[in-house]
Length: 212
Image (tube, rainbow, N blue to C red; front, top):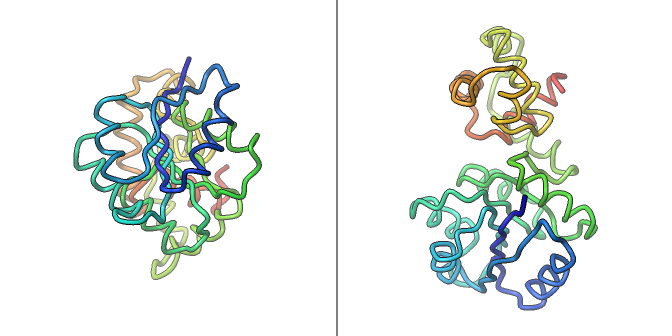
């Protein structure tokens, strides 16, 4: 199964490097590369990517602004941020804007390829060193205790455990022998009860609370 990728970065050297990295991968196809947010919007509409790899700090329209514009335009492709920033605010802002993952540019090429494959399978991808950063952001200003966990049903707890392992709704449904739509309903309930906004946040929350 081939994952169609759109690369968005205002540095030509980065675009060239990632493009060359993907050339040898039969299951990862670069369908376009954009040097700006506006160009990304146009290419996303014409190339129909499965995955958008998005730089955060770009001249003109920033990565966050681009991400919001993509979602506002109805682009449903998964979006993974690839950036040099390990700043907590940037991480949280990206996830709040609808990012499906957050990776750092200093990662090994093989690790990036693996992460892109997992993202293409709708798995959660987050730079390992940022897990504690996100966990701190989630608990900041929030009273997290056993009472919150008690709000989850046994099925929701099981699904949350699978989310923490990076599994997609389809994969969870297959494991549990239920419809994918049923899993989606449970995921919405989990996010609501835990006061979270994304699967990535839920995955980190679960790991921090021993549900992996």
